[in-house]
Figure 1: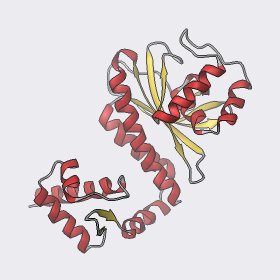
Figure 2 (figure 1 turned 180 degrees about the vertical axis):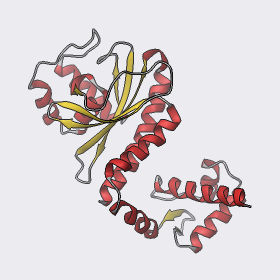
Figure 3 (figure 1 turned 45 degrees about the vertical axis):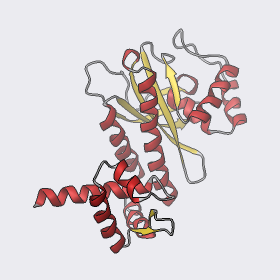
Figure 4 (figure 1 turned 135 degrees about the vertical axis):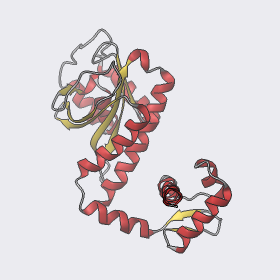
Length: 252
């Protein structure tokens, strides 16, 4: 019986996480499809969550989270170090990719690496917490720049010589500004052998409650292991982590 109860609880929590990513609500069949569960099981879960007032049913037959979930989450946030929150969502992404992940903050014209989750694969990126890298040659740095107003990003890029770290490093400010526009449209940044040869990274910026970049996250892997399809996959993983962290930051 304990195993069945745990599975039911897991499904219920999966429903809450899913609805948190769809604030406009989802219909019953959408919930069942997205979580790969029978519609009857989804219906029973939703009835329980309705009874406990964690969700509500709209006139359009869509399920939405209620403020009760916010109340529970806010109680946790008040007593939690934000860096622990960031690492928690980094781990969620890491568990799906098993590639080296970094978290960084802005440090003047550089990115300061403040956390790292090491891949367990035999070939992985050499880096360490505490290192500082230039904005123009890292995925996290480009993500930070893309999250800034265009004039601020240009000012940063024009204020120093852009160091050529590898033959692939982009050192032309105008070319980088074009890349930043692509990053804003796509949602994630790409750095392909521009910081370290044979290493490819994707990254996103995490915004605070005022819409300013507070953190950046990245996934790094040997170039031969990160084709275009995986770049898209890892970019999507990071965007999910970014949105979850930003919800916490807005609640602080």
